Length: 418
Image (cartoon, rainbow, N blue to C red; front, side, top):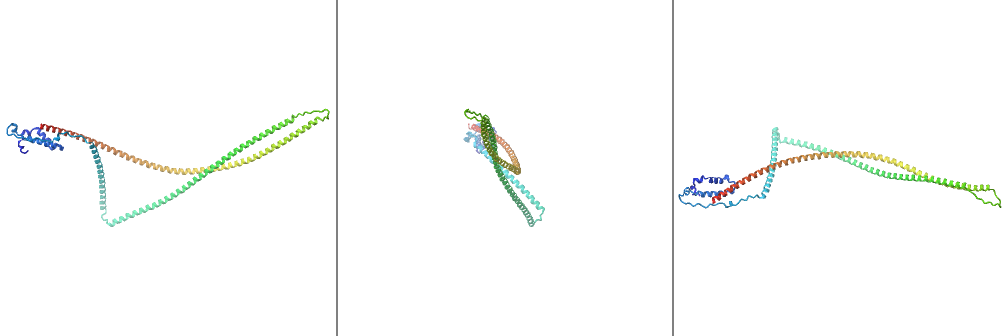
């Protein structure tokens, strides 16, 4: 090709196509390696064109044969510009890895900065201590160390003594709690026993009231029976008296015999009937008196039982009043104890509620900070996404430009081939 270098014409050097081809084949206009084959083919075509001379174009001189034009046939095949579906996943994964590495790098940078600041602070302190007293020797440092250790030992001893005191106070409090617990259990047992006694006394009182009602019902029945017997006795007595008054005697008189005095006969009969009436009256009165005596004895007996029952009921009422007063006092004491326990529980619950509220407020503040950071991260991600979309748009435009350049190059090559 060097043999043909002297045969270029001025028209071929100044042609716009040649300048365009030079500009296309320059390094500044060939960003992809796929253009190397096109540039090589163009240089070969230019070399073939350089074999032409001005004399050959005018018909003078010798006839030269130029070599065959060769180019890369792969450039005639259509470009496969399909996007790999896994490419986006790979890019996202790379972005995530880059973000993680950036975060780790930022954390390491922060730690390094903190360590540098701490180192700087320690260095300044060390310099200050050196400037403050340069006459300190190892002995002085040992004395300072001993003093500091003695001070720490004294503090530790005081803390141990305070711990022992607190342990003794805790033991005393536990002993008091045990004694109060025992007293409370004893009071509960006493209350249970008193409640049991109260139930038994109540049952006895109910039985006494039932027995009293039974006796009263029996007494009322006896009074009714006595009244009934009195009425029966009066009716029988009236019937007897009426029978005695209404006695009529029919006498048959035998005129042949001796006629006694009729008045004497009537008097005799009347005397007999009066004797019978008096006898029956005495018998009836004795019977009624006997029955009344029996009823009076029963009434006296039942009255004694009633008095005894009333006495027992009064004693039971007194015991019930005593038990009620004891129960009221126990309830008052238990109420006071329970009120103290409830006040302590309320205070503990209030403290727990305040701590829970403060914890919830702290967690809420942390969540708000996390939400704010998440929003900031989201805004940053949106910004990065917009930047990536702008970059993608620029890359798409560049790809279209390169595709158009490749198409123009292939068309120019096809024209040269033709």
